[in-house]
Amino acid sequence: MKGDKVKSNFLKALTEAKGIISYASDRANISRQTYYRWIAEDKDFREACEDITEMVIDLVESKLLTNINEGDVTSIIFYLKTKGKKRGYIERFQLEDISDREPVEVNIIMPNQERNEDTGNDKPSED
Image (cartoon, rainbow, N blue to C red; front, side, top):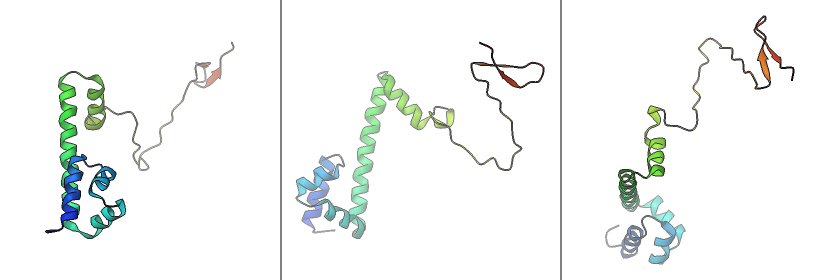
């Protein structure tokens, strides 16, 4: 990669563009296909691009933490949903393989149903 002025110009443009490839490609007068070819063929170039991406992520994380420190609720929720999953801050459930466990029976009672106390079964309510 040393001595390659075009790649060097692209990396400078990519840094200025905060990692946005199409913007950097336009600024450096190369096609996106050229960028992807360089990524595939040139390990040093690929690593330099990855470093720029990491720099941008660091910048964005610092902005997020600034927002959190200022009490921005949306930023707080986002952070907890992404970093607080182990503490239960999730919106979706992840299923795990329980094939080695005993089956569990679950009865769901719909709002228009009541339990028959004699049999333990659900019966439609008589509305």
